[in-house]
Amino acid sequence: MRCCCPKKKSLQFNKIRNLAEHRVDAAQLPGQLHTKCYCPSCGRQLVLSKCADPWAVCLICEDGQRFFVLPEAPNAADSARAASLHFPQISGLSVEAIASFWLSQPVARSKLNQQLARILRAILEARSVLDQPRFSFCPICGRTFEGCDHSDIWAKELRCRSGHSWALRGFSLFAMIGATRLELQAEYTNAVISQLIANWLKGNSYLEPNLHESVRRVLISSPLCPRDEHA
Image (cartoon, rainbow, N blue to C red; front, side):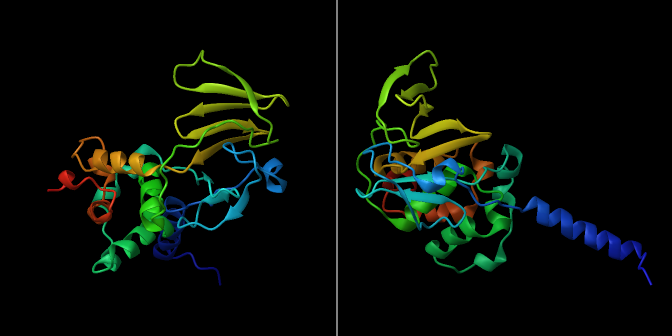
């Protein structure tokens, strides 16, 4: 017989709602870049590589320069709930295990600010990145960018001879590839990581709701954390 118990239906509905609330979809490369993709800095081919963020696409060239495609960021309302979340399962864990938990577990990652995700990944991997990459080559075809348009004060438009157009803003390249909007992110330098950690530890009223106390511990533990930020 078919069960019409209201309590059972309610439990099923809540389970489905919870799954949707904590859903994280892994980042994907557009089909056009699956076969070949080129390093914006040196023009050599990029290949897939592993990284500490299980939801991200990591690409690396022969020179060791890495670029990332991240999963969709949580909306501001969701990430602003992060500080109030309770995760008894991370009590007593090392800072490395805590960082990995926030990056990997959907219940936490679905509320993790995107910039914090990039910082946690950098802390876990402990790579030394001293120089900001140049953005000289088109990731789609590998040809050099020939000109730029400075009409937008927030981003610089870059075009290659093949007609591919990208927008450069900070450490990221943006492009529409078919129906997909792609953001290709360069790796943060050590200096940038240090500055971002300092910003997150200043007690900014806008950022604080996004910063869980366990994540604060991870930031403070990093060798890149400015020592006077938590004296």
